[in-house]
Each structure stands twice: as C-alpha cells, then as structure tokens.
Length: 167
Image (cartoon, rainbow, N blue to C red; front, side):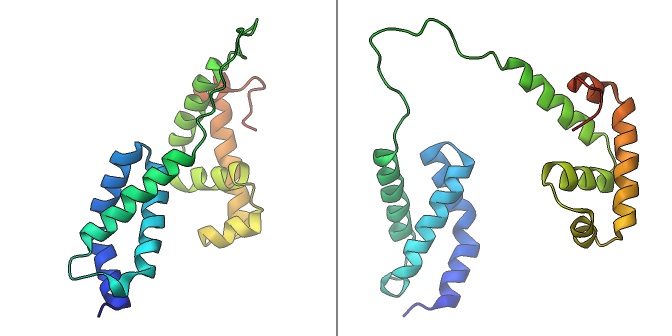
C-alpha cells in the first residue's frame, strides 16, 4: 500500500520529467506547471490504488487532463463576414519600453533593484519591504532614493519614459 512518503518521493524524483512532458503537450511553461499540479493532485487522490509503477498512471492523467483542457478552451477566434475598417492600436513601441525598463533595472545593484520592484511594481509599503528584505524602513527609503537617482541619469531609463522619471 502506498503512503504519503511514497508520493512525496515520487514527486521529488519525477516532477522535472513530468513537467517536461507537460510542456511538450501544451508548449507553454505556465500552463505546463498548472497541468502538472492538476495531474499530481488527481494522482494523490488515487495514490493508494496505484500499482508499483505509478508512471503510466500519472502520464495518463497528464494527457487526459490536457486533452480535456484543450477541448474545453475557447480559441478566441470569431469568424466575420466583413473585415473591420481599421486595425487595432499599434503597440509595438511598448516592447521597446519594457525592454529598456528591464535593462535599467538590471543595471541597479541587487538590493536597490529589489526595493524598486517591491515598491513600484508590487506596490508594497516601506515597512513591508523592510520586513521582506530584513532591514529598516529608513534603509528601504535610502535604497529607493539612490536607485531613482541612478535611473534618472541612465539614458535607457530616460528614453523609456516620456517624463524622464520611472513611474
């Protein structure tokens, strides 16, 4: 009879291989991780009934779950009789902006980058950031100030924004 320890060992040993199989099924890492988690949850429910070799059972769950997701998912395409007069909004400039912001953030030291990401992208208050980083709120404020000063003189960051300051 299989128990929780057997399941945990199986997951530790086989999850990387199962994730690769899930990725090959759906060709998207995020969806593959969701697919694997769903398959492992279903396998856990039936773990006591699984024989000595659980691989075929788990792979079957993985492929069946993927097939049911694929059948159920709407593709988002709606056929029309006439084409629209105008194309959608041109958003190609946003790609360059995102890349410039990534490069500017990559140029910052680790702690300053962490403060900027937690403060401006995760929208966390200074005390929470201090708790996460293991420092004082004053250190968070000084690191943010230094990071913004560096970003203000960084040509990539200035080109990425219209006002010259990261928002």
